[in-house]
Length: 536
Image 1 (cartoon, rainbow, N blue to C red):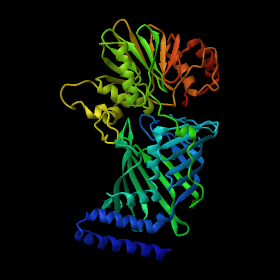
Image 2: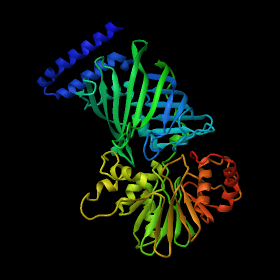
Image 3: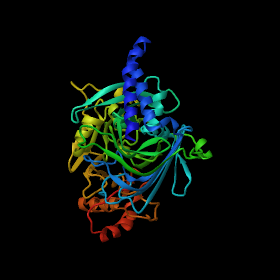
């Protein structure tokens, strides 16, 4: 073993020393020639070219990016078991795992805390992606295909194969002062989907040790909140798995790291118990329902809740537009720019000649924050909890790199100096927007484990309470299968604030009567001794 590794290292180093001179004679870029030589040496070190498929089983934990508290790490759950199957020839993969809460702190979103065992199965094949629902039926996920193909390339086999195919792979040396060591770095771009869109072309860099083993991959994926979001995957504990193949049994990944996040965002950690290569029949067949599925269209369905108060629904996340004398306030800008542009257009049709002066953001989870930049590009001021101030000003609304998925704010930025709009207005306990006729009262939600920066919006004139992720009313007269701790926290906050509520309007789901809320949640809140809740 040691002899083989040493020979591989010596051969790899000799190639790196010889190739640049030959490349210069041939008029080639020496860094690109060195990149190809390093990737070829890495290929020999682990046997990547001989691998047609791989099946990895093990345990670990997985976190929920974009579902964290205002500061701190991502909420996580244990993977009681996981299996990762990749078929390189067909560009297909299957990732299945059983998620349990384990001993992880039950705080944050993303389905935390996990109740019992949650089975997750995700697929990708070419340009198609899908999941299995609780009944085992495929649900198309067309927007996920590019990212899932991309993640296959962050593994040693996928990285080496893609790098060898890339015409622009180039190598450089990088010195790490903390460790007083130099590693060899290969970088390249590659296509992860068909089409001319910027997000189809991705950048990857890989760091190799002196044994030509891949230790870390750093890459970027498009994100409506963070822009070009960094993903870092570390590989270690390489072992022989047979047939001259050597692969890592440990991986650790970060996602969305930023200087404002001490320690980074730990996303996933896995420990393999078994790795099999060249397993037969690993290509994933694309279900007919997935192949013929079309990407969901953005539609906005209006429902008038009261005079000048309109629910902008029609999707997984709602917004609420509230008319004032000279302007409009929109409560929640979720998901992404595409959804927000559709809502903004409908707001303008509904309340013509009135600017959107304020966007109320309920909390910092990315599915509720993804459209915020779109409203700021319209000139709106974001009103949110003070715990969000630094992150929103210095990250979300800052001129971060957005080459993969440019948005309106990145293409038409506001000047950082001189006159301009107030981008963020924060508060601690409560805040009011009023013109003497219409009023929106904003209140911080105490005792909640789903988020530490959650607010609810109350319209006293119409007795409407708007919440996100806390309580989604059932059909009138119906019941909930489970009353979450978040709903209990909402109930207790309504009583603490002495709010006179007639109608509950959720960001997820349809409005419902307070009488049903009292009937369903009240008894559970009376019995529950704990003051706070997890999340939906």
